[in-house]
Image 1 (cartoon, rainbow, N blue to C red):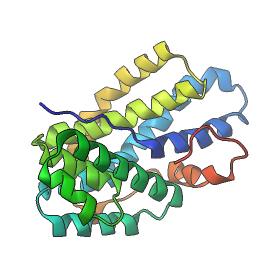
Image 2 (tube, helix red, strand yellow):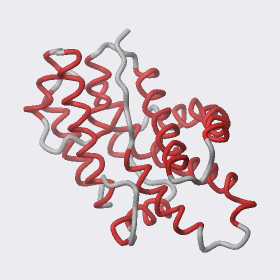
Image 3 (cartoon, rainbow, N blue to C red):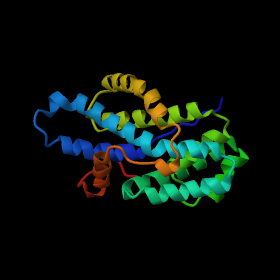
Image 4 (tube, rainbow, N blue to C red):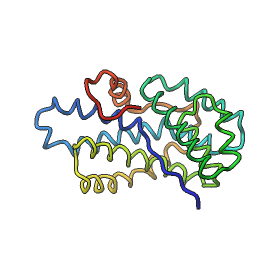
Length: 215
């Protein structure tokens, strides 16, 4: 069965701002892990309520170029956060380039000339659908990527160690089926941000004096 490696950089830039915010908190060493878990849960909920509808519809329309173009445009309009917008389009382009070179499927290659913005959720759903992966596998892979890249960025920022990171990933993966169940039937028109605070924090990324991640 074909597989595609994925990274979700919007979560990394959001986590960078969270870390800087955490530095101003009292007794942060005692609350770091629990705060990180809560923050990643917020990211998961936002990914479920906003991204999964686009992933699901793009998966169903993987052979319909006009529908994919409309979804890409709708995602662009709905992504008012300029940091998320920039990260989504760059990562989407990277996924299309990689998938077209690795697999060479006509439906995947056609995305390069069909889409205008290349928003990551739309590209992700379209690529996985073109590769013949079922919807549940596609949605699970997307949500797993949210957890993995968020926690991995915390490791790179030296907030937690790799062993603690694996424990967090294992624990939070159990939330994925329930989040998918709640959002699986939502249409792209229903896409929304459930926890706006994380979106606001991410929107401040360009204002940081120093940062490890740039998307």
